[in-house]
Image 1 (cartoon, one colour):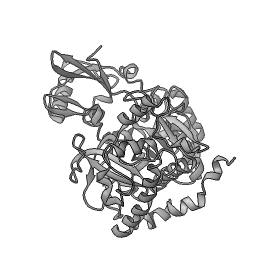
Image 2: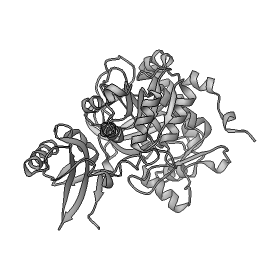
Image 3: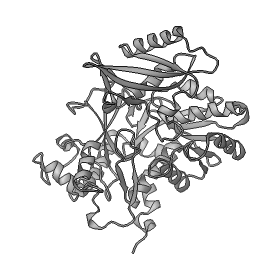
Image 4: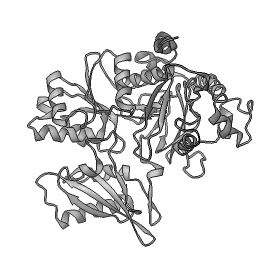
Length: 459
């Protein structure tokens, strides 16, 4: 029986999908025609594999699509999109794994993880050995693009267990970089106070993780008498930043440089911010990315928000992914960007369309509220939205943390309420709590992604 490491050739992978200078001088510099030709060839392989998977035969067949109808990228819009909804329906019909993975042919060495379950029941995630290492390679590409150095000590706060995050970062750093990794995990896996001591003892220079917990770590450091600027050596933070105020995050860590990247468990990394801090560059040699209207699934114009829909060009063994609607919202940026690379750019994560709340005709994205709260100096940036219903009318109350020493009075609540009304375009309630007052609700110390919306309409 062949082993996991027999299923791929690292040298061949790095030649096809280079990292470091090879990426900057290779895929990142391809002209439109050369990039298109590369995508066409890889797309053909993925489509051929998808026809072998029951999920796609059923999904496409229901639209009257037959093998041979999809001849190239021009035919991509003919294929229906799908999301986690269809995947979970597949699991319900064919428990426990569904029929979207393509393991009927007896593929060995399959890696199984699950999603975090933030927006519902956890979904199984399947990776063939080749596909898994390709995702690891591409994440290492992003870290090197952002300035990761061989001498760096990377402190990762991504969670372990069944979720993919912590394992993914560990494999990317160890397999495709020369850095030393501190796989601390979440605050549940390694207490926050202990994480600060580990960072100080081992000289952590880079933090990788979700920005919410990274901000919390800076607070914990100060609570135990550690000044991140004076006592720690963090120079770079790479994680999921979204609409957060980067200046505040950087200042909390003594001026560390902040980098964003985007991906989901199914696809791996899709786009990464570069040293120009001018949007997130799509790794277009590895992914086809569309931004689509959440309701009509039609392409949205450059500059307008739409759902990020991904086709993965290297997943040709286990769980091929063609037109997967992530329900994450972003917008495409115009032009080539400051680095003058031949890759399109997105603005980064701007909310979730399936977590959107419509209040009096206004779309409110709870995950995007952090950017607005960052405008007020008296707030820590931590919050939770509570969704309730009065009669037929939905209401949101935002539970907001204030900094230590700040009075939780009616005047401050009014200021925050006015700020959110201006930024959101609709009135929401505001409840102020002290530092750490939202932690039990958001579960920030225990979860890979903190809870930002609690739906209490049916409680």
